[in-house]
Amino acid sequence: MSATPQKNRATRRVLAAAAGLATVGALVAAMPAGAQDRGHGHGHKPRTVDVQLLSFNDLHGNLEPPAGSAGNVSETQPDGTVKAIPAGGVEYLATSLRTARKGNPYSVTAAGGDMVGASPLLSGLFHDEPTIEALNGLDLDVTAVGNHEFDEGAAELARLQNGGCHPVEGCYEKGKKFKGADFPYLAANVTKEKTGKPLLKPYTVWKKKGVKIGFIGVTLEGTPDIVTANGVKGLKFHDEVETINKYARELDRKGVKSIVALIHEGGAPASTSYNYDCDSPGAGDGISGPIVDIAKGITPKVDALVTGHTHQAYVCTVPDPSGKPRMVTSASSFGKLYTDTTLTYDRRTKDIVRTSVKSANHVVTRDQAKATDMTRLIDRWNKLAAPIAGKPQGWISADINGRGSTAPEKPLGNVIADAQLEGLAPADKGGAEVAFMNPGGIRADLVHKASGSEGDGVVTYGEAFTVQPFTNMMNVVDLTGAQLVTALQQQVSGSNEASPKILQVSKGLTYTLDLTKSGADRVVADTIKLNGEAIDPARTYRVAMNEFLAGGGDGFAALGEGTNKLVGASDLDLFNAYLAAHSTAAAPLAPPATDRITVIQ
Image (tube, rainbow, N blue to C red; front, side, top):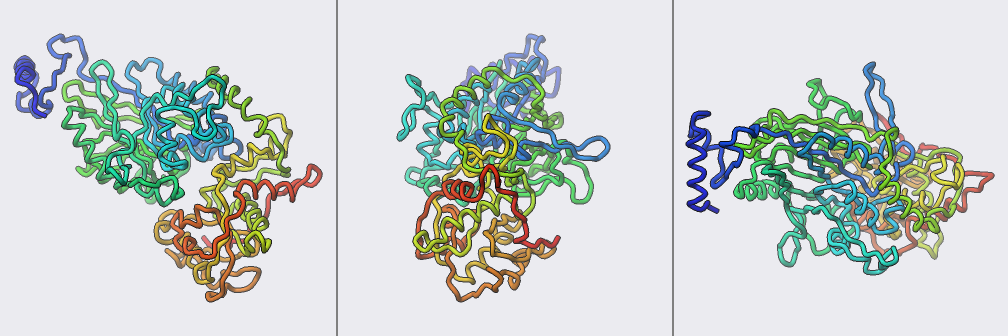
């Protein structure tokens, strides 16, 4: 790695000329071997230059503005009240980013993963090609992979990066071949089991007029726990901190001193308002969750962390291992916010002046002009999707909240679990007695207001797909009463202790959740009843759930112990069948009561 003698001589000349400015020792220490700063000696280049880092995360193929409460961001007003602001949609995201870049000659745009996957029909129906096309148009420079980038497996992720038409469905538009992403997907901590080699590039270096910034991208190490087994087949996921530190050393050796980590893992700020001051010193203030320990372990060589996964909004500082504060940001989800961070780049040290890093989240408001190129893109794909998307599936009398509900038991969760139980209860369909739905699998709300020309209250196939976009196959398995109780306890213990994952349960199952207790005790075991009868630990129950939960996903190891498995229809098919059976234009489906889980707080 050592520099050539010529380069060293050039460096010495530069140092001699600059000796009047500072001690040579300090300059030698600050300069990488063989670095040449062409700015010296001419006197016209300022020593520092401000680089604008624009970032966002967890877009999940939301090209159109997300509907209902899932499309709002919370903003704390000067008087302390909180206001919901409708936000998001790539027509507005494009305008926001383009406006922000004006007057910033050094601007780079990066993302924190989950750009695709669990997408609404407009993108999901076409294996997220529309979203990649939109990101190309937004001038995204780089993104980390997230767990959802693995939903359809490594080969499909490689296709999104490199282009080419879908291996089964072919090309969607006549005479047009899918080009792939014109930005790199980074997956530093994902290797192939057979070769041990990285699946995709671990890092990339952004360069402009002598300014160099390295980006390292990782997804959460726990990706295999939250993606179906097929999606991560043949892959290994490594520790985020060790991986980032390893590649930060490599970049540093190559003379890249300014480094940003893109991490698809996050935390939870004390307030859900995007404009909350995360560094306020009050008791219980700040941020908690996995990203805190990760941030504390990442080498000081890394200057800022762009994070994601938790769909939260925060701009915080977390101390690095040397105790110095370092910026950690996340921009909610679905393109509703973007983060604007100023990185002051020192041309002499080639590093970021960490003390001057400034950052803020901004709302992607819907009262600005739409980007016409994005409107055209959405219209083009909507025409292709229309024959499927617009088909009515049922009727609702009011919003039925799922993703937008913060309660442990969500009205839409109850509808989905009931749909699964009803579809799989017949003896020839599995004989299910109870159904469980994972909360993370509910991707939207059912919104009463029309999304297109279908009329208010009509649920279209596109809207139903947006709620349940994975098309998971349903399983019915045998579990003992003891295993059922353990599964319910796993909602609030083990890997789910810090941030509980409360399963949505079908009608007939009731219990008490006591959040004043800790760990597994939060599920009050002697209150668990099915159709009014206590669960018998020795009895066998037939339990319906999607294949993801049946594989032990989301930390529910007990659900993965089921036997005598029967594979049923897909979750989406059962959901649509339930809507058809339980609603008409004259008698629409009303939001169900949420009285299955009694919560003590």
